[in-house]
Length: 109
Length: 114
Image (cartoon, rainbow over all chains, first blue to last red; front, side, top):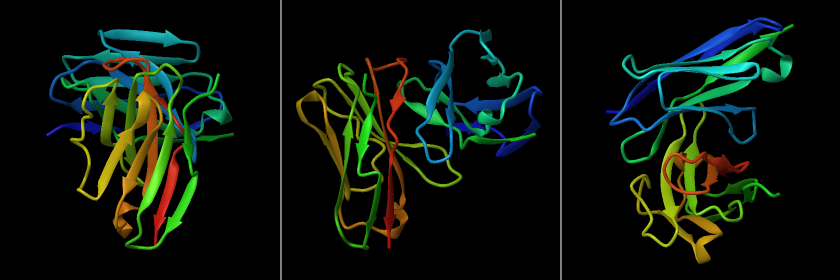
């Protein structure tokens, strides 16, 4: 079966750094997406990785290791507005997105 | 520069009734997806439309669920004889093309079946 695992909830302090991990087992691989979803709102696109390595985009970075079936999302200089759920999704060989359950990130002052 | 829109934003219905959920994708996007999001679970794929091709219905949970896309734009998801387990947020997304193009999501319809 296809499986995406990520922690259910994480807590971090404003101004700090947090790393949200995602491991996956899917039928084929056509890239990994990270989305941010604030409570009651639509998911919004953060990043896409298809090759191994780190992609940096401002305060957010995303890393992929295809051989390990592993990705992480790194958030730096945390702000209160970063409190949200972070969704990891992998595109399988049929170009269908398989979604993790999301990690709820709580930022404390 | 409108994004994906969905209506209604909230729908409360009684068990056994039919409901229709609407999605207006981003103009020019050829691919349209429907997902269901239940509390504490990942997004569940329901159905996918690409251009004029036959839709991928592999995610529909039962024959009570159906969807159509008229004129390659607006889509309607219909749930017949609703059950309490159908209660969830129904999300629509569109992308410029199929494949690895980024999917842009609408705000969702929260369906509550009493």
